Image 1 (cartoon, one colour):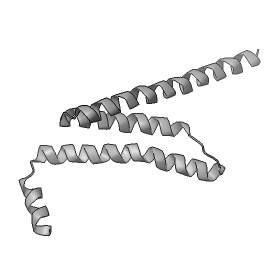
Image 2 (image 1 turned 30 degrees about the vertical axis):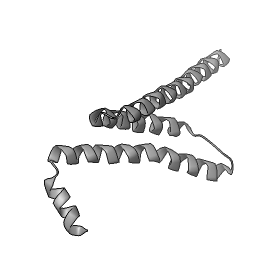
Image 3 (image 1 turned 90 degrees about the vertical axis):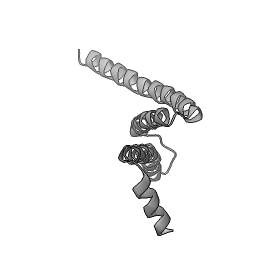
Length: 110
């Protein structure tokens, strides 16, 4: 087993190893959203989706989308592409609400 792993490691190009690192980093970023959501829900003792969930979703999804393009995997590209649209839309709603909240705060001060 170790011999086969060593042989694989030595026969894999540096570029391919870097792309594997990008893929694993992207998967870690994408997985962090579930950890953030789990911690927030445990603290609230209810199902909560914190704002950071959408930022981790977008960043991890974008990284995975780039990785999928490198791998030329149409299933993975389509899945992550649709996800990026959904994450972007949720971030838009967050920003739009933040803008509305700050404009209503400034009108209250008058």
